[in-house]
Amino acid sequence: MDTESLTAQLVIANQEKAALEAELILANIELDFQNEEKLKRADELTIANQQLDILNEERTKRAAELIVANKELLFQNSEKEKRAAELIIAYTQLDAQNREREQRAAELVLAGTELIFQNLEKEKRAAELIVANKELLLQNRLKEKLAAELLLANKELVFQNLEKEERANELIIANKKLVFENQEKGKRAAELIIANIELDFQDEEREKRAAELIVALKELDFQDEERGKRAAELIIAHREISVQKQEKERRAAAEAKKDQFFNMVSHEFKTPLTNIKAINQLLEKRTDPADKIYPFIVNANQNVKRLEKLIEDLLDVTKINSGQIDLNIAAFPFSDVLTNSIVNVQLTAHHHEIVLKNSADILYSGDQFRIEQVLINLLNNAIKYSPDADKVLVTAKTESNKIIVCVQDFGIGIAAADISQLFQRFYRVSKTAMNYQGVGLGLYIASEIIKKHNGTFSIESEPGKGSTFCFSLPLS
Image (tube, rainbow, N blue to C red; front, side, top):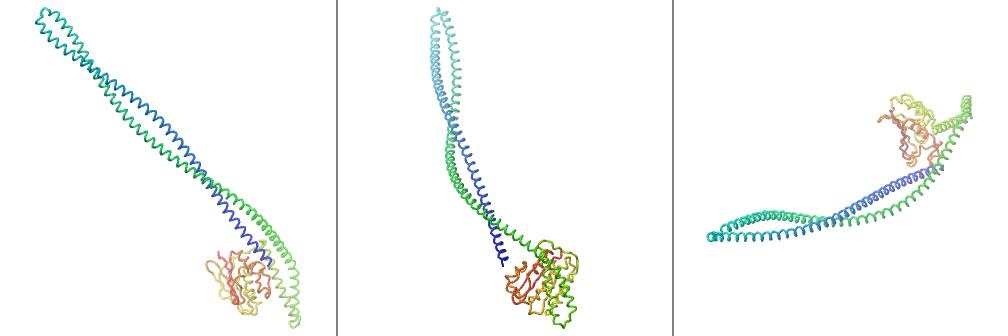
């Protein structure tokens, strides 16, 4: 019971270890995730700051452009005023030239009138014809000069009209350009207002991100504290695991020493037991069955066989624990295993009939001796734990590429709580241990032999109605 208690404690400790390791893994995963979230928030804040810097630079550029546009607008307004002043001066010059032209036209009218008067005076003043002709030539020359001046004045007036039209066109273009620039100035002002609004929104977002970052930092500090706690718990768990490992190693060393002791004791018992067996067999042959001492000799021989079986089991256990049990694999008819085992056990089973319901006529590759050892153990157990019955059933069949062998008794049965522990070394059901001989090694050895053949065991039992032990061996 101390071994069972220690085993249960070891299982609980391993489970707690696994739980602590799982918690540590989850904590590390959660911390990594939170660190990644923190890095993401930091990257987002960096990107937001860069965007804000870019927007501030854009805002500065837009302000500089607005200042340049205002200066350009002032320059254009001054140019417009200059062009307007020049236009006023041109109009003034044109008025003066028109007045001059009118004066010249009036002079030309006066000259014509004077010429008519002179022609009339020519007839009257024939004597004065030469003077009048000279005066006429002079006046004609003057008239030609005035006509030439008038032509020049007309050309200059045409040129001034053209200049006036060009200035008017330039003034219209300047007005259109000024209107366009005013519109551009309005657009730039609107863009500047939008940029200011967007900048204010980004400032608010930046403040929000800063608040979120502060919260994230607080949460990270809390997680660091939690991680420290988990690390402390992990250190404690590792210490407990180390203690459990040391305890496990100590148990393993104790088990190894115990197996070594069993091996040594078994070998030490085997030689004198062989001598005792030989002497008893000699005494049994030479003693008269009617002699009173004969039953004692027979009983001694049976106990020697029992002790010999116990020694063989101990040797098998030590071989299994040390990994030294080897299988002699060879092909053989599987029906031989069934018949040999049944005949072997039936010789000593005087109150039970072992019935082979069906056999498996198939060639199987395995260790025939070890498989017979398993089946003999199951048959002996079936007979031992069914004292009030008179029959044991054996069945063998091939199914799903494997051989299944079952041994059914009609005895005391096994409780469900004990079935899972039957294949443990030295385990015996507490309610029946005192009433039946045995040390609890047979089923352990049988299960290890079946495992070596890549097979499995299964048990069906009901208290008071009997048990069915089955093992399956793969044909491949």
